[in-house]
Image (cartoon, rainbow over all chains, first blue to last red; front, side, top):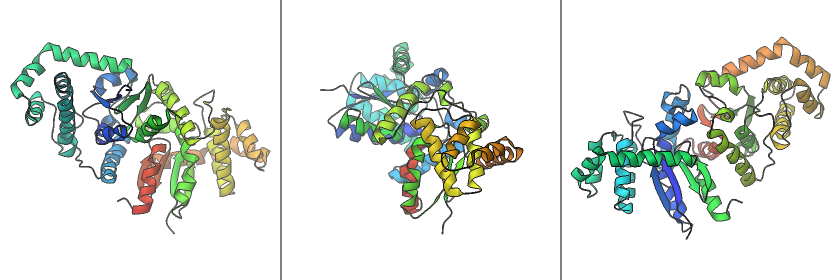
Length: 200
Length: 200
Protein backbone atom coordinates (compact mmCIF):
# COMPACT_ATOMS: atom_id res chain seq x y z
CA UNK A 1 0.00 0.00 0.00
CA UNK A 2 1.41 3.36 -1.02
CA UNK A 3 1.59 6.32 1.34
CA UNK A 4 -1.45 8.59 1.40
CA UNK A 5 -1.45 11.77 -0.66
CA UNK A 6 -0.75 14.70 1.66
CA UNK A 7 -3.29 17.53 1.36
CA UNK A 8 -2.10 20.72 3.08
CA UNK A 9 -4.59 23.56 3.38
CA UNK A 10 -5.68 26.59 5.37
CA UNK A 11 -9.36 26.69 6.33
CA UNK A 12 -9.43 30.32 5.14
CA UNK A 13 -8.22 29.54 1.60
CA UNK A 14 -10.94 29.57 -1.09
CA UNK A 15 -8.83 27.55 -3.51
CA UNK A 16 -8.35 24.94 -0.75
CA UNK A 17 -12.12 24.84 -0.29
CA UNK A 18 -12.60 24.05 -3.98
CA UNK A 19 -9.85 21.41 -3.89
CA UNK A 20 -11.34 19.88 -0.73
CA UNK A 21 -14.58 19.23 -2.59
CA UNK A 22 -12.79 16.97 -5.07
CA UNK A 23 -9.49 15.61 -3.77
CA UNK A 24 -10.80 12.46 -2.03
CA UNK A 25 -12.68 11.38 -5.15
CA UNK A 26 -9.81 12.18 -7.54
CA UNK A 27 -7.24 10.28 -5.48
CA UNK A 28 -9.65 7.48 -4.54
CA UNK A 29 -10.05 6.52 -8.20
CA UNK A 30 -6.45 5.33 -8.07
CA UNK A 31 -7.00 3.30 -4.90
CA UNK A 32 -5.10 5.82 -2.81
CA UNK A 33 -5.96 7.64 0.41
CA UNK A 34 -5.68 11.34 1.24
CA UNK A 35 -4.26 12.64 4.50
CA UNK A 36 -5.77 16.05 5.30
CA UNK A 37 -3.36 18.43 7.01
CA UNK A 38 -4.62 21.89 7.98
CA UNK A 39 -1.86 24.45 8.27
CA UNK A 40 -1.53 28.20 8.80
CA UNK A 41 -0.90 30.19 5.64
CA UNK A 42 -0.07 33.35 7.59
CA UNK A 43 2.89 31.64 9.26
CA UNK A 44 4.04 30.10 5.96
CA UNK A 45 3.83 33.44 4.15
CA UNK A 46 6.30 34.96 6.58
CA UNK A 47 8.82 32.52 5.12
CA UNK A 48 7.86 32.73 1.48
CA UNK A 49 7.60 36.53 1.55
CA UNK A 50 4.09 36.35 0.15
CA UNK A 51 1.04 38.27 1.41
CA UNK A 52 -2.64 37.25 1.54
CA UNK A 53 -4.39 37.63 -1.82
CA UNK A 54 -7.06 39.73 -0.14
CA UNK A 55 -4.52 42.45 0.69
CA UNK A 56 -3.00 42.70 -2.78
CA UNK A 57 -4.48 45.39 -5.01
CA UNK A 58 -5.68 44.27 -8.47
CA UNK A 59 -4.95 40.63 -7.68
CA UNK A 60 -7.63 40.48 -4.98
CA UNK A 61 -10.26 41.87 -7.37
CA UNK A 62 -9.32 39.25 -9.89
CA UNK A 63 -9.37 36.41 -7.40
CA UNK A 64 -12.73 37.44 -5.95
CA UNK A 65 -14.14 37.11 -9.44
CA UNK A 66 -12.27 33.88 -10.08
CA UNK A 67 -13.68 32.23 -6.93
CA UNK A 68 -17.26 33.06 -7.90
CA UNK A 69 -16.70 31.77 -11.42
CA UNK A 70 -14.99 28.62 -10.18
CA UNK A 71 -17.91 27.91 -7.84
CA UNK A 72 -20.33 28.38 -10.74
CA UNK A 73 -18.31 26.14 -13.08
CA UNK A 74 -18.00 23.48 -10.35
CA UNK A 75 -21.64 23.88 -9.31
CA UNK A 76 -20.41 24.30 -5.72
CA UNK A 77 -22.07 26.27 -2.91
CA UNK A 78 -20.06 29.44 -2.37
CA UNK A 79 -20.35 32.72 -0.50
CA UNK A 80 -17.41 35.08 -0.04
CA UNK A 81 -17.35 35.16 3.77
CA UNK A 82 -17.23 38.28 5.85
CA UNK A 83 -14.79 38.56 7.60
CA UNK A 84 -12.26 37.21 5.12
CA UNK A 85 -9.57 36.03 5.55
CA UNK A 86 -9.69 34.86 9.16
CA UNK A 87 -7.33 33.21 11.63
CA UNK A 88 -7.91 29.47 11.49
CA UNK A 89 -5.96 28.30 14.52
CA UNK A 90 -9.08 27.10 16.34
CA UNK A 91 -10.33 25.06 13.38
CA UNK A 92 -6.90 23.57 12.69
CA UNK A 93 -6.35 22.67 16.35
CA UNK A 94 -9.79 21.10 16.56
CA UNK A 95 -8.99 19.06 13.47
CA UNK A 96 -5.79 17.59 14.93
CA UNK A 97 -7.43 16.92 18.30
CA UNK A 98 -10.22 15.04 16.51
CA UNK A 99 -7.81 13.33 14.13
CA UNK A 100 -5.99 11.69 17.05
CA UNK A 101 -9.30 10.19 18.19
CA UNK A 102 -11.22 9.49 14.97
CA UNK A 103 -9.67 10.19 11.58
CA UNK A 104 -12.96 9.83 9.70
CA UNK A 105 -14.69 12.20 12.11
CA UNK A 106 -11.87 14.72 11.72
CA UNK A 107 -12.27 14.73 7.96
CA UNK A 108 -16.02 15.18 8.30
CA UNK A 109 -15.34 18.09 10.64
CA UNK A 110 -12.96 19.65 8.08
CA UNK A 111 -15.52 19.34 5.29
CA UNK A 112 -18.24 20.81 7.50
CA UNK A 113 -15.99 23.69 8.59
CA UNK A 114 -15.22 24.49 4.93
CA UNK A 115 -18.93 24.28 4.06
CA UNK A 116 -19.81 26.59 6.95
CA UNK A 117 -17.19 29.19 6.03
CA UNK A 118 -17.28 29.17 2.22
CA UNK A 119 -20.64 27.54 1.57
CA UNK A 120 -22.68 29.58 4.07
CA UNK A 121 -20.22 32.45 4.52
CA UNK A 122 -20.23 32.14 8.34
CA UNK A 123 -17.19 33.10 10.40
CA UNK A 124 -15.45 30.03 11.87
CA UNK A 125 -12.57 31.79 13.62
CA UNK A 126 -13.62 31.36 17.26
CA UNK A 127 -13.26 28.22 19.40
CA UNK A 128 -16.98 28.47 20.16
CA UNK A 129 -18.03 28.25 16.50
CA UNK A 130 -15.58 25.45 15.89
CA UNK A 131 -16.99 23.59 18.90
CA UNK A 132 -20.51 24.15 17.57
CA UNK A 133 -19.54 22.58 14.26
CA UNK A 134 -17.90 19.60 15.94
CA UNK A 135 -20.79 19.33 18.40
CA UNK A 136 -23.21 19.03 15.50
CA UNK A 137 -21.22 15.97 14.43
CA UNK A 138 -21.53 14.27 17.80
CA UNK A 139 -18.28 15.48 19.38
CA UNK A 140 -18.36 16.45 23.08
CA UNK A 141 -18.41 20.25 22.79
CA UNK A 142 -17.04 21.00 26.26
CA UNK A 143 -14.27 18.45 26.03
CA UNK A 144 -13.15 20.00 22.73
CA UNK A 145 -13.31 23.55 24.14
CA UNK A 146 -11.15 22.50 27.08
CA UNK A 147 -8.64 20.92 24.72
CA UNK A 148 -8.55 24.03 22.49
CA UNK A 149 -7.67 26.17 25.52
CA UNK A 150 -4.74 23.91 26.47
CA UNK A 151 -1.07 24.17 25.56
CA UNK A 152 -0.78 20.67 24.19
CA UNK A 153 -2.92 21.25 21.10
CA UNK A 154 -1.31 24.64 20.49
CA UNK A 155 2.10 22.99 20.40
CA UNK A 156 0.73 20.24 18.18
CA UNK A 157 -0.41 22.76 15.56
CA UNK A 158 2.91 24.61 15.76
CA UNK A 159 4.69 21.33 15.09
CA UNK A 160 2.39 20.52 12.17
CA UNK A 161 2.96 23.94 10.57
CA UNK A 162 6.72 23.60 11.05
CA UNK A 163 6.61 20.14 9.46
CA UNK A 164 4.62 21.49 6.52
CA UNK A 165 7.20 24.22 5.92
CA UNK A 166 9.96 21.64 6.25
CA UNK A 167 8.17 19.66 3.53
CA UNK A 168 8.26 22.76 1.27
CA UNK A 169 4.62 23.78 1.56
CA UNK A 170 4.40 27.34 0.22
CA UNK A 171 0.69 27.87 -0.42
CA UNK A 172 -2.80 26.45 -0.06
CA UNK A 173 -3.91 23.99 -1.28
CA UNK A 174 -0.63 22.11 -1.56
CA UNK A 175 -0.32 18.41 -2.22
CA UNK A 176 2.56 15.96 -1.93
CA UNK A 177 2.22 12.72 -3.87
CA UNK A 178 5.04 10.24 -3.27
CA UNK A 179 7.44 13.15 -2.69
CA UNK A 180 6.20 15.18 -5.68
CA UNK A 181 4.70 18.61 -4.81
CA UNK A 182 1.62 20.11 -6.47
CA UNK A 183 0.35 23.57 -5.61
CA UNK A 184 -3.11 24.90 -6.38
CA UNK A 185 -6.63 23.67 -6.93
CA UNK A 186 -5.96 23.79 -10.68
CA UNK A 187 -3.30 21.10 -10.35
CA UNK A 188 -5.74 18.23 -9.79
CA UNK A 189 -5.33 17.17 -13.43
CA UNK A 190 -1.58 16.85 -12.85
CA UNK A 191 -2.11 14.82 -9.69
CA UNK A 192 -4.36 12.46 -11.67
CA UNK A 193 -1.74 12.13 -14.36
CA UNK A 194 0.99 11.55 -11.79
CA UNK A 195 -1.01 8.84 -10.02
CA UNK A 196 -1.76 7.20 -13.35
CA UNK A 197 1.69 7.31 -14.95
CA UNK A 198 4.17 7.91 -12.14
CA UNK A 199 5.12 11.28 -13.56
CA UNK A 200 5.23 10.59 -17.29
CA UNK B 1 -17.81 38.94 -35.53
CA UNK B 2 -16.89 39.08 -31.86
CA UNK B 3 -13.83 40.91 -30.58
CA UNK B 4 -10.61 38.90 -30.46
CA UNK B 5 -9.53 37.30 -27.19
CA UNK B 6 -6.80 39.48 -25.65
CA UNK B 7 -3.66 37.53 -24.70
CA UNK B 8 -1.32 39.56 -22.47
CA UNK B 9 2.09 38.09 -21.72
CA UNK B 10 5.70 38.81 -20.85
CA UNK B 11 8.27 37.07 -23.06
CA UNK B 12 10.13 36.09 -19.86
CA UNK B 13 7.18 34.26 -18.30
CA UNK B 14 7.35 30.44 -18.49
CA UNK B 15 3.61 30.07 -17.89
CA UNK B 16 3.00 32.48 -20.80
CA UNK B 17 5.25 30.32 -22.97
CA UNK B 18 3.13 27.27 -22.20
CA UNK B 19 -0.10 29.19 -22.82
CA UNK B 20 1.29 30.59 -26.09
CA UNK B 21 1.72 27.05 -27.39
CA UNK B 22 -2.02 26.42 -27.11
CA UNK B 23 -4.10 29.60 -27.02
CA UNK B 24 -4.59 30.06 -30.78
CA UNK B 25 -5.83 26.50 -31.18
CA UNK B 26 -8.10 26.61 -28.10
CA UNK B 27 -9.74 29.88 -29.13
CA UNK B 28 -9.80 29.03 -32.83
CA UNK B 29 -12.04 26.03 -32.17
CA UNK B 30 -14.77 28.53 -31.31
CA UNK B 31 -14.22 30.56 -34.48
CA UNK B 32 -12.54 33.35 -32.54
CA UNK B 33 -9.24 35.16 -33.01
CA UNK B 34 -6.51 35.93 -30.47
CA UNK B 35 -4.79 39.30 -30.19
CA UNK B 36 -1.29 38.84 -28.76
CA UNK B 37 -0.18 41.69 -26.51
CA UNK B 38 3.31 41.54 -24.98
CA UNK B 39 3.62 43.53 -21.79
CA UNK B 40 6.21 44.10 -19.06
CA UNK B 41 5.60 42.14 -15.90
CA UNK B 42 8.23 44.10 -13.97
CA UNK B 43 6.28 47.33 -14.47
CA UNK B 44 2.98 45.64 -13.60
CA UNK B 45 4.42 44.09 -10.44
CA UNK B 46 5.28 47.53 -9.11
CA UNK B 47 1.52 48.17 -9.03
CA UNK B 48 0.37 44.78 -7.77
CA UNK B 49 3.07 44.60 -5.09
CA UNK B 50 4.18 41.23 -6.41
CA UNK B 51 7.77 40.11 -7.03
CA UNK B 52 9.20 37.81 -9.69
CA UNK B 53 8.73 34.13 -8.85
CA UNK B 54 12.46 33.58 -9.36
CA UNK B 55 13.29 35.84 -6.40
CA UNK B 56 10.85 34.25 -3.95
CA UNK B 57 12.33 31.56 -1.72
CA UNK B 58 10.51 28.19 -1.67
CA UNK B 59 8.08 29.34 -4.37
CA UNK B 60 10.82 29.56 -6.99
CA UNK B 61 11.99 26.02 -6.23
CA UNK B 62 8.44 24.80 -6.63
CA UNK B 63 7.86 26.67 -9.86
CA UNK B 64 11.13 25.51 -11.41
CA UNK B 65 9.93 21.96 -10.85
CA UNK B 66 6.41 22.78 -12.05
CA UNK B 67 7.68 24.22 -15.35
CA UNK B 68 9.71 21.10 -16.12
CA UNK B 69 6.79 18.87 -15.27
CA UNK B 70 4.37 20.96 -17.30
CA UNK B 71 6.68 20.78 -20.32
CA UNK B 72 6.87 17.00 -19.94
CA UNK B 73 3.08 16.62 -19.57
CA UNK B 74 2.53 18.91 -22.59
CA UNK B 75 5.32 17.27 -24.57
CA UNK B 76 6.73 20.76 -25.18
CA UNK B 77 10.37 21.73 -25.78
CA UNK B 78 11.64 23.42 -22.63
CA UNK B 79 14.93 24.58 -21.12
CA UNK B 80 15.11 26.84 -18.08
CA UNK B 81 17.03 29.74 -19.65
CA UNK B 82 20.09 31.34 -18.16
CA UNK B 83 19.82 34.26 -17.47
CA UNK B 84 16.27 34.10 -16.13
CA UNK B 85 14.22 36.23 -15.83
CA UNK B 86 15.33 38.86 -18.34
CA UNK B 87 14.19 42.29 -19.46
CA UNK B 88 11.95 41.85 -22.49
CA UNK B 89 11.61 45.44 -23.69
CA UNK B 90 13.45 44.74 -26.95
CA UNK B 91 11.30 41.74 -27.82
CA UNK B 92 8.06 43.52 -26.90
CA UNK B 93 9.00 46.64 -28.89
CA UNK B 94 9.95 44.52 -31.88
CA UNK B 95 6.61 42.78 -31.67
CA UNK B 96 4.58 46.00 -31.78
CA UNK B 97 6.75 47.45 -34.56
CA UNK B 98 6.14 44.29 -36.60
CA UNK B 99 2.48 44.12 -35.64
CA UNK B 100 1.85 47.54 -37.21
CA UNK B 101 3.25 46.22 -40.49
CA UNK B 102 2.24 42.55 -40.60
CA UNK B 103 0.13 41.02 -37.80
CA UNK B 104 0.77 37.44 -38.93
CA UNK B 105 4.50 38.07 -39.08
CA UNK B 106 4.43 39.62 -35.61
CA UNK B 107 2.77 36.53 -34.17
CA UNK B 108 5.31 34.28 -35.85
CA UNK B 109 8.04 36.45 -34.36
CA UNK B 110 6.48 36.09 -30.89
CA UNK B 111 6.29 32.31 -31.20
CA UNK B 112 9.88 32.14 -32.42
CA UNK B 113 11.10 34.41 -29.62
CA UNK B 114 9.36 32.17 -27.05
CA UNK B 115 10.83 29.06 -28.70
CA UNK B 116 14.30 30.60 -28.66
CA UNK B 117 14.13 31.62 -25.00
CA UNK B 118 12.25 28.72 -23.42
CA UNK B 119 12.69 26.02 -26.05
CA UNK B 120 16.42 26.49 -26.63
CA UNK B 121 17.21 28.43 -23.44
CA UNK B 122 18.94 31.27 -25.34
CA UNK B 123 18.92 34.83 -23.98
CA UNK B 124 16.67 37.13 -26.04
CA UNK B 125 17.13 40.32 -24.02
CA UNK B 126 19.26 42.35 -26.45
CA UNK B 127 18.04 44.23 -29.54
CA UNK B 128 20.65 42.31 -31.57
CA UNK B 129 19.24 38.89 -30.67
CA UNK B 130 15.72 40.13 -31.26
CA UNK B 131 16.79 41.44 -34.66
CA UNK B 132 18.43 38.09 -35.45
CA UNK B 133 15.18 36.29 -34.68
CA UNK B 134 13.14 38.69 -36.82
CA UNK B 135 15.80 38.60 -39.55
CA UNK B 136 15.48 34.82 -39.72
CA UNK B 137 11.80 35.38 -40.53
CA UNK B 138 12.55 37.72 -43.44
CA UNK B 139 12.34 41.05 -41.58
CA UNK B 140 14.90 43.74 -42.48
CA UNK B 141 17.29 43.44 -39.55
CA UNK B 142 18.80 46.93 -39.80
CA UNK B 143 15.46 48.66 -40.21
CA UNK B 144 14.20 46.92 -37.06
CA UNK B 145 17.36 47.80 -35.10
CA UNK B 146 16.95 51.45 -36.06
CA UNK B 147 13.31 51.38 -34.97
CA UNK B 148 14.22 49.73 -31.64
CA UNK B 149 16.67 52.56 -30.89
CA UNK B 150 14.04 55.25 -31.52
CA UNK B 151 11.74 57.00 -29.08
CA UNK B 152 8.55 56.21 -30.96
CA UNK B 153 8.54 52.47 -30.28
CA UNK B 154 9.61 53.04 -26.67
CA UNK B 155 6.59 55.26 -26.14
CA UNK B 156 4.40 52.73 -27.91
CA UNK B 157 5.39 49.97 -25.48
CA UNK B 158 4.88 52.31 -22.51
CA UNK B 159 1.38 53.03 -23.77
CA UNK B 160 0.64 49.33 -24.27
CA UNK B 161 1.80 48.47 -20.75
CA UNK B 162 -0.27 51.33 -19.31
CA UNK B 163 -3.30 50.12 -21.26
CA UNK B 164 -2.79 46.57 -19.98
CA UNK B 165 -2.70 47.80 -16.39
CA UNK B 166 -5.77 49.90 -17.06
CA UNK B 167 -7.47 46.71 -18.25
CA UNK B 168 -6.62 45.05 -14.93
CA UNK B 169 -3.78 42.83 -16.14
CA UNK B 170 -1.95 41.63 -13.00
CA UNK B 171 0.11 38.69 -14.20
CA UNK B 172 1.28 36.65 -17.17
CA UNK B 173 -0.34 35.05 -19.05
CA UNK B 174 -3.54 37.04 -18.67
CA UNK B 175 -6.52 36.80 -21.00
CA UNK B 176 -9.59 38.96 -21.50
CA UNK B 177 -12.54 37.33 -23.25
CA UNK B 178 -15.43 39.69 -23.93
CA UNK B 179 -14.53 41.68 -20.81
CA UNK B 180 -14.00 38.59 -18.62
CA UNK B 181 -10.47 38.20 -17.20
CA UNK B 182 -8.59 34.90 -16.90
CA UNK B 183 -5.17 34.65 -15.33
CA UNK B 184 -2.75 31.76 -15.74
CA UNK B 185 -1.90 29.02 -18.20
CA UNK B 186 -4.06 26.66 -16.16
CA UNK B 187 -7.16 28.71 -16.96
CA UNK B 188 -7.44 27.55 -20.57
CA UNK B 189 -10.21 25.12 -19.57
CA UNK B 190 -12.20 28.04 -18.17
CA UNK B 191 -11.68 30.08 -21.33
CA UNK B 192 -12.98 27.14 -23.36
CA UNK B 193 -15.99 26.87 -21.12
CA UNK B 194 -16.61 30.62 -21.28
CA UNK B 195 -16.43 30.64 -25.09
CA UNK B 196 -18.77 27.67 -25.25
CA UNK B 197 -21.39 28.76 -22.73
CA UNK B 198 -20.95 32.48 -22.26
CA UNK B 199 -19.95 32.02 -18.64
CA UNK B 200 -22.36 29.33 -17.45
